[in-house]
Amino acid sequence: MSEPLVITPEPAPMRRPGIWLAGVGIYILLLSIGAAIGGEIGNFTSASLNALPFVGLAILAYFAGTSFNWAWIATGVWLTILIGASAVYAFGLGVLNIVDIPPGGFDPNNPPTLQPASLFTILLLIFGIFLSFGIGLSTLLSPVRRWLTRFLPLDPNSFVHSVALAAIVTITLIMVMPLLVTGQPPLLTLVRAVGSEELNAGDLSAGAQLRSQVYGLVWTIPAAFLAVGFGIRRNLSATLLRIGLVRPTVSQVITGVGIGLALAGLITLTLPLIDTIWQTFGWPNTDHEAFSELIAFAISPLGALVIGVTAGLGEELAIRGVLQPRLGIFLSNLFFVSLHAFQYHWDGLLVVFVVGLICGLVRKRTNTTTAAIVHGVYNFVLVMLEVIAG
Image (cartoon, rainbow, N blue to C red; front, side, top):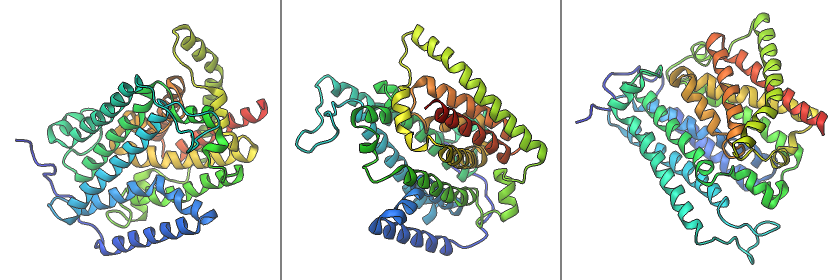
């Protein structure tokens, strides 16, 4: 018989769950209002969907503790919903790589067609997603978690750590399945088939898309605080220490800028070499033309600044600030890479992995703030190079 999921007590929550349940109710109300009104308010509230579902899982796990209670059950239900939604999203995008999308985009009178031979690929995609479930949820078994502690800095007896591990491993595997099974990043397939304007439903201008990036950061910052237990297990100072968000020293700012510039230069110089290696072995490359069209809204000096700040700070807070101290550099970086698997082929994901690994090492040696500077400068320089080249 397997050991219990949690065998040691964790600190009791600082506050009762009532205030958090009220907060969830208010959030759902705001989300509903935003969806009903649409426009800028709708864009603002919908930007929360990238971060707050994970926060809800963390909050439930904090209140679940060690006993079989309502929060324990609610955590399991929400984990299932979160993983299920990720699977449906990945499956839907994966299928778009398989069907024949009509020229000009989707038309109810001329729906996408599916070749009989493609049914096997769809079945393989379904199998891959269910395999992801099995591998990810196996980490809930105590022997598996204890074995993983050889490589990860987590507490195998912590319910919160166990839930985080299961969620991240499962979603990481699910996110790469469309590329792994179909051989194409689905967002680039969509761009080639219908164009970026059709993909964005024609209602998001370049300015609106940039504002959506800012809105996402506005939600990500408090989400990162809540995900590590702010107001539940930690006060503000302990929360800032946990996620590594500090005021950087002058030396750290200079170091971060220098590493970001060096990293951007290194990647720019080695991309032709990577392309040559991929072509030599006959491996498919990322479609740079389609990718440029996908991010065309950001190809401007303002776009470079927005992407540098939002991706640099937002992604570093979530990945290196929240996840890395518990899941280690490698696993948290794999999750970071998987979030880009809809828009890059394996050559692009290799670059993302290297960038994430360097940011992870910077986080480990210094803090999340310095890692965010590295990431932000890197993104800013690459977008500005696109602006100059265009």
